[in-house]
Image 1 (cartoon, rainbow, N blue to C red):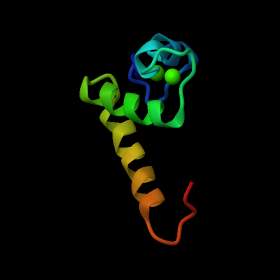
Image 2: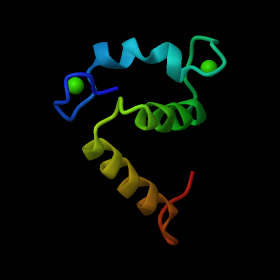
Image 3: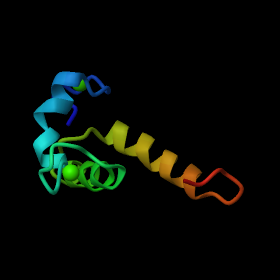
Image 4: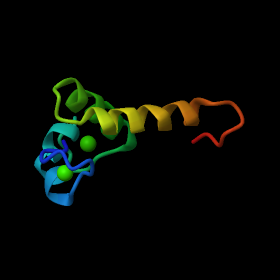
Length: 70
Ligand SMILES: [Ca+2]
Ligand SMILES: [Ca+2]
């Protein structure tokens, strides 16, 4: 998703991949679709390893007991 590899996802980069992230094509991206889409893009190399590592840390922190859950 981070096409120019600057470590951040710009609005343009985001919109370019919107359709791929929007799994059911209803024009909106749910939290679940974003989650799934992120890993799909990551597996295709569209997300930098840096942002994957960052995301992984966030997931681990969210999964840690005692932290607020959704
Ligand atoms: Ca970028
Ligand atoms: Ca959707």
